[in-house]
Length: 396
Image (cartoon, rainbow, N blue to C red; front, side, top):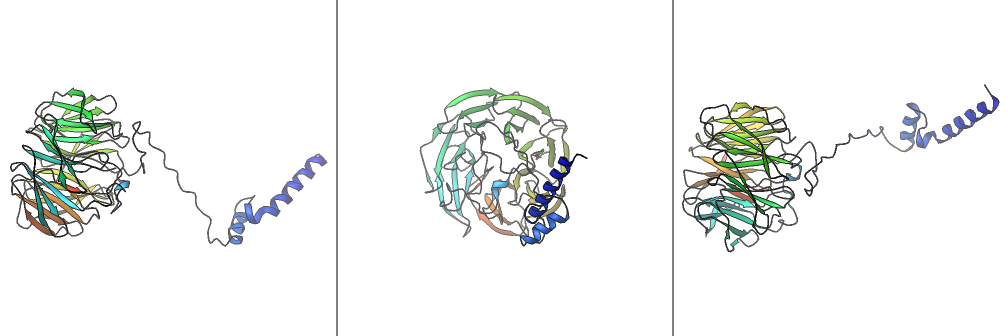
């Protein structure tokens, strides 16, 4: 070996030895010595990097690519809503009113007159307004959740249900009778684009992890739609393999890979791969499966079985049903939401003029509250999350 090269190797080795205690030039033992010198008990393991999600342009960044509900942890309220009083808003379809419940006392503290046939109470994308969907009244009644006061109704045709695109640009009116999706300005509700659909009873929906598409259910024709959010265009449609299928609520799994669709005629859940939009599998839950709600730890999903007065609990980590809670006096649990702290599941009793409060740890009924006739899309507010995708409260 050339003498000059030998000299360079010796110098480099000496330098490395001198720096071993701090930089661990070599491997193994040197790194262990460096950690001891710094008072560390064990080397720090590198954390796996989570790949960023290429979301819909303008959409707030996905907090956790493995959990779409990461922003919905117990009491993690946005600064926008942190001072709002905790209330449960119940639209009474037949009474044309909204009953307002204080969850602390389980009492109705106010009854607000609204338009004809209110179906759902929907938090706006920016969390500042609650929109009451007056379906046959062809209007939306705004409620200020800070004061509890209703404002002047806004003319919107056939607002059976209401969603918001993840970028906050558009409201998506599920115009069931009109057989269309109406994309409107999320703030003014001015019509931007009408998308006709060939299915009947377009009703509920949920968005993909990246916000680039959503899956919608068509109740009366037993079909599912896949809609491109940016293009405002139906890109997929399929008929469910059950005679008389009546798909209802839709929820995406925490990891964003599957969509769950409640079917009150098939009495269970359709489980669909949203990306491929292939044929779904089916899981029986109970008679009249209707509403779907996610626990605050993203571990469980509560399924209201309206036809038998029960709630089934699905565990995402185990990929199976683990519990069923029966309402002690029966009932018709329908739509609702989970309290901000995650401890109470609130559901409307569609055909019993009542509302149920259920302990999410035990399944015990905490209260049964009388309201108006035909209570439907109940909203618990405020809830954790950065923004709302609509319905009775889908937060990201």
